[in-house]
Length: 463
Image (cartoon, rainbow, N blue to C red; front, side):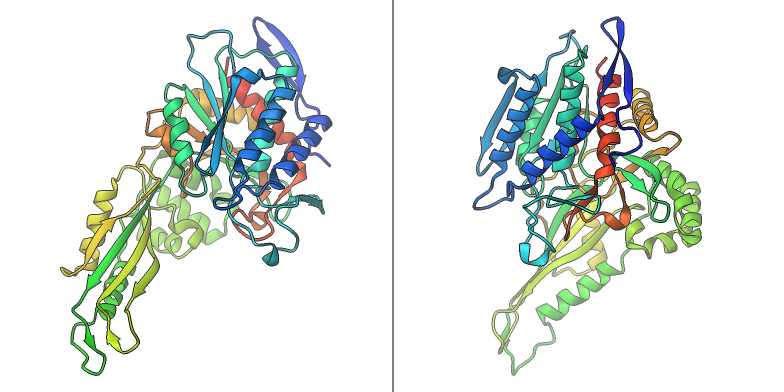
């Protein structure tokens, strides 16, 4: 029930001696699920009744029960939320710490839309169901229990191991920025957010693990067209709504330059074999030559891939007019962009202005809670540790890098020059992934191997 590596023995050198630690055993699996279920039951959603501080207290209690000193754990309130930082001291204080990163808040979920109450976790047909089952309270619980398992087994890291959880990653991301400021001297960050392992739709076996070494920059731009307006019985040749509509259509048809970097190239070459023949061929062709028009056309037509080949911008909100019988005086449209690494937001704003080709249009950067960052380096020690960890749990499974299309707390660390890597140890079918959606769920069989993956990553990178 708990996966192929239940009770795996991890041989790790510590302080000059070898020892074995059964990390992903039945007890650790059950403890992880129990902790995740308790966390899911706490409605850690921004706004009235936000229970993120209670999640922080739950995690603090679990860490203390697992051997962490209470003095090494701090919960800090911020508005209606909070963040947690816990430190496991290493034997060599001269070394920079290893950070394990997660978040405690979740996206809103309406019980009437789900098949069950999203804030009452259940295990059903081999899945843990509930808001946060994938993003990311189960990941949080696994990271906590993996560290507790190592601690109880007698492992002592050379460098400090810090586990931290932000409290508003799904909204303002303010606590993630605060945490990164406090931990700006870290060696590197392992962000366990989401699910990086993919299970085959037909065979049910693991296909590959795609860790992320970078992500696109989140940006919001507001476009405004104004007009004197007038009576609707006397239409003017210049109508603000018509003008904005034309501007939006020109932006819709604009194509940002397709791009590739080492991370996205590694993903295209690594994952191509699991896609359809046409998509796989396009991925390989684009990896070889990112100006290949045939490959660009094929990948751009698929929502799953258009965001992987460059910057994307799309209108998400529009508002205009003030009365049914009056000509519109003001129209606004909000454009959301996900910017390929290496481009400042001001550059993309100028491209949007040029694409709209309307001197009467004003565009303003209204982005909040985001920062531009380069991709993290493909460090040999990190790549080796990820491959070691994944292959220990799933021998022979393909492991390769990728570029994230969303935004995470990793960006705050990268803005301080601290490398951050998304390495959620969970494996899931693409068809079962409902992060931010209805009936979020994760297979219970992923938990045992996930515990072992985290344990190996920590031991490999904290020695």
